[in-house]
Amino acid sequence: MSNPNCVVIADAGEAFSYQNMNRAFQVLMELENPVLISLGKGRYYKETSGLMLDVGGYMKALEYACGIKAEVVGKPSPEFFKSALQAIGVEAHQAIMIGDDIVGDVGGAQQCGMRALQVRTGKFRPGDEHHPEVQADGYVDNLAEAVDLLLKYTDK
Image (cartoon, rainbow, N blue to C red; front, side, top):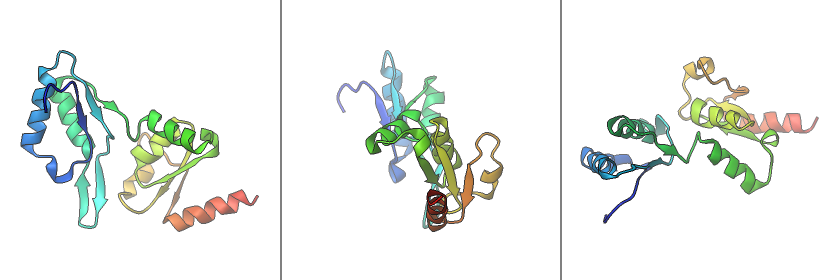
């Protein structure tokens, strides 16, 4: 890495080591105008072995240590959802987000004017249905149930 002008942080899994995080910190602190770009700000995700810490925790650590705010270009960034809508050629009110993350999927979609269903799989937690800031437009037990629900209302 020669003469970096920013730090981009994404899903790195096992590569999120102290050594790598400290190098990112050092790069940011050496920059006159530090720029931290994060490809998301999820708190955790689910693997077959269980819940795993996601990029958001590392992003927040660098924000705090460097006294800066990251530019988030993945979920729940409004730009992420707007670019997806544009790519498929529909308006926000015509789309429904189906996801397992109450903040990243449901909250992000709703901020753009989309409706959103939360599926009770993956990283869903029972407390999500009582989240203090984000309330899904509906909850389903699996993706098949979501599809059935959408088809039911599409037929009418």
